[in-house]
Image (cartoon, rainbow, N blue to C red; front, side, top):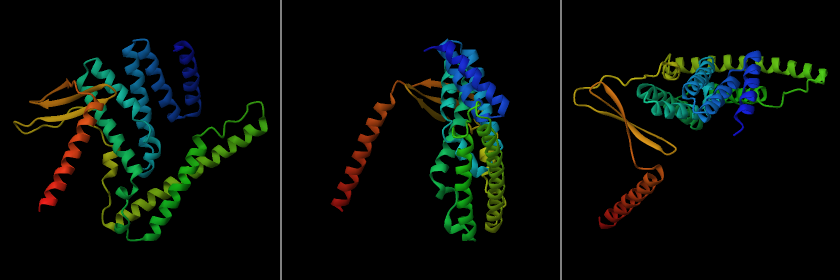
Amino acid sequence: NRLDRAEGQIADSLAVARERDLSWLAQEGHHLRGRVARARADDQTALAEYRASIASIERVQGGLANELQIHFLGDKLEVYHEIVDLCLGQRQITDAFGYLERAKLRALVDYLARHPDVRLRPGGVANPGLAERLSRLREEHHWCYHRLHGNELVANPADPTAAVAASAEIASLQQAVREREKQIGEILEQQALERGHPDDGTRASFHGEVRSVPPALPTGTVLLEYYCAGERFGVFVWADARLTFVPLTARPAELRRLLNAWSLNLNATARAVAAGS
């Protein structure tokens, strides 16, 4: 809870991010600045810092090939949940809904990262050799990316020889990452052409604008979108061109208990029906 010291260290990190053009570090710095602002009850500054963090995330995302975004986005959902919670506290319902939609998109990307069979089904690949080469390139890119952005290359400023060596390795790794991203993109395009689909649709999903207001609905239709983060639980209600947020008194732990009981009852009923037949 030493907020002044935290702010000083964050400022130092953001200065490094600007100097070396490290958008991923800028994202973390702005995220932490938002938390410091919330701890000071300065909600307007917190909103501005969270937005800067999200802008940095999406700027990096936009520069990566579709298949490579997952390595960057997989652990970036927390800032979205925090800004949704803050917007709800400020009664900025439309903004909260828009950031929730963005968070759901990131969750989808994370799911695809953990389930590669969803993105690329072996049975649909005309050229198995391309799939093998794609897998190898992904592994190489993953290694280079984490070597480049990890802590291993932080050289001691007092050792000029080590600093020169670190700079040379950084340049080499950056070139290796660019080359593999280019090759991965070429393979994905070739696979899409072989399947007869010049665009598999993921580019629009990952790069397109996320709605901040739900689409028009037929008369008499209501859209419900649930939101749960920590102890805040509620539902966005879109009806008659009006968006509202209704807090719910249920808690996640209680819901999980009820869902488990419901699942057990369904399974028991299914076994009883099967035994009776």
